Image 1: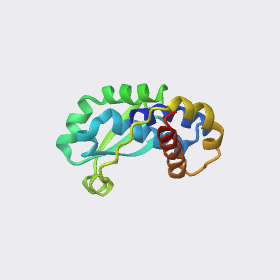
Image 2: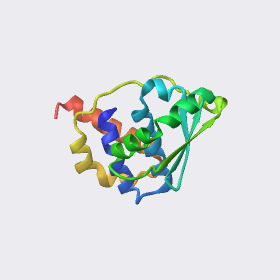
Image 3: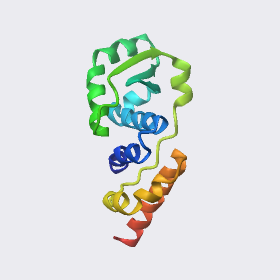
Length: 149
């Protein structure tokens, strides 16, 4: 996952700083910065003018997260190598958090991110659909791994 996170700034840049790509990159960076335990009870829902809205399970989580919000702002921006989040607004929305929970991700360690960045930037940039672009990059990395390059 760490190697894929390193590609997020490239994806934002290649998208021409597209608002939807930027939002999804911030969401992914939030989950990484928050860690699995926090990401299980807090779910990003919107990014608007550097204001990240994050749904939390209950008022207790909201209170705790507000105390350390600056750390998460710093963590997200550091992962994205830019200033994409200036403030995090935590809102209690238990239903949204529960509905957003996903299956544990299958892990795959990418070892060839440099090759992906150099060889596949122009191809990946042409893919407008975020999910399809990610699948393309994953398939390319897996192929490189199998070839042992």
